[in-house]
Each structure stands twice: as C-alpha cells, then as structure tokens.
Length: 244
Image 1 (cartoon, rainbow, N blue to C red):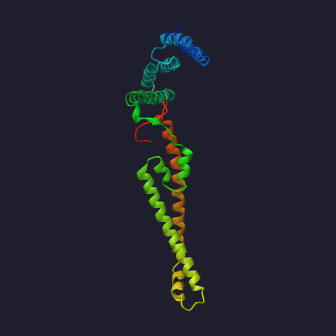
Image 2 (tube, rainbow, N blue to C red; image 1 turned 135 degrees about the vertical axis):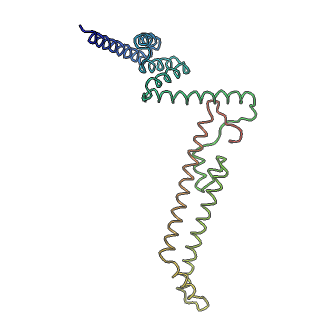
Image 3 (cartoon, rainbow, N blue to C red; image 1 turned 180 degrees about the vertical axis):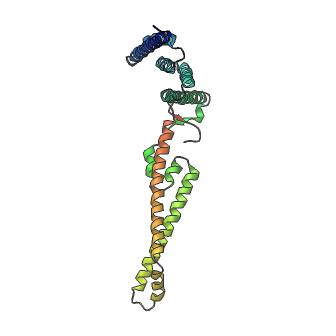
C-alpha cells in the first residue's frame, strides 16, 4: 500500500472515530449524563485536539455541568479555529448575555442588601399602563417616561384640537349658511365652506391618521415598556430607585 493511501485510510479512520465519539457524547448529554459525555469528549479531544467540533462539544459539556466560564473558553476556541461556526457563535452570544445578566443580578443583590430602604416591590402592571394610554402619553407618565409622555400628549392634543377646530368651524359655517335668519352673515359662512377644498380635507384626514398613530403607539409602547420593566425587576422582585 502506498504511503498516500495509508495516510488517507488513517485519516478516514480518525474521522470515523471522532464522529462516533461526538455522537455518543451528544447522546449522553441528551439523556442527562454530563459526566459520561465529559469522558467521551476527552477521548474526542485526544483524537482531534484542534477540532472546532470537539471544542464546541466541550463547551456543551461544560454548560451541562454548569461551568459557564469554561464553556465560554471552548466556544471562543471553536470560533478561532472556524470563524464561520454559526452554532458556536450563537452559543457564545447566549453565554455573554447570561454572564451579563448574572453580573447585574449580583450587583442588584449587593445593592438591595446594603440599601434595602431604597428598593421596593415592583407594582406596575402592563395592562394598567396600556389602559392609561387611552389618553396618549398617560401610560408613559405611569412608567415614569416623563419626556416621552409629555411629547406624546402634547402632539396628540395639538392634532386633536386642530382637527376639532376645523370640523366644528365647517359645521358651524354650514349651519349659518343654511339659516334663514337675516341677522346671520350667511355670505361669510358660505365663503368659509368654499375654503374647505380637497387640500383642506386631505390635511384633516392626515391629521386624524397621525393622531390615531400616536394613540396606537402610546398604548403599545406603554404596555411593552412596563412589561420590560417587570422583567428587569429580577428574581428579588424589587425595582431600582426612581422606577416606581
């Protein structure tokens, strides 16, 4: 047998052995046997120490064993070997988020223990926030987003006031123009009606659409913002100072 053929055969046998070890390790993980998976992963490491598949597997085993920092190292190594490894990249991103959340949790725990009087139970309700936003901006004020709430309320009130003034002016002029009372200036009223051409009605329609858009956004934003605040109240059930 030629040397090239022997090397090719040896490589095929190595790849088959590695594939089998990885398969068995992943099966052990799926069955809730991280220790068995760890032993198989170590055997796989001996076969192919610089394989992106092996390092990803070692990361999965470490995660199953609760060793998040070790898992992060293996996922990072897997990406160094194969930057296009999408699975390792996604798992690494999840770990970064988890570690960040853990750090925030530790910090919050320390703050709560040191300054319990500054923290209080989270009492806001996303449904209540959405209900308040039936009047645009009130839901944001409920969530203590004062600048956003005032901006939404002012925009909605200006639009509504302008639309109502134009519609009331038109209907008032129409009533006067159709009246038979000689004391009423029907000619001036008729001029007002004639001023309501296609452009004016288009502007009124756009203003109504804008108002409805602000109204819908205010409800949606208040609900989702409050729900996010509720999630961020973490396991302690408290909120940071200034959020109540």
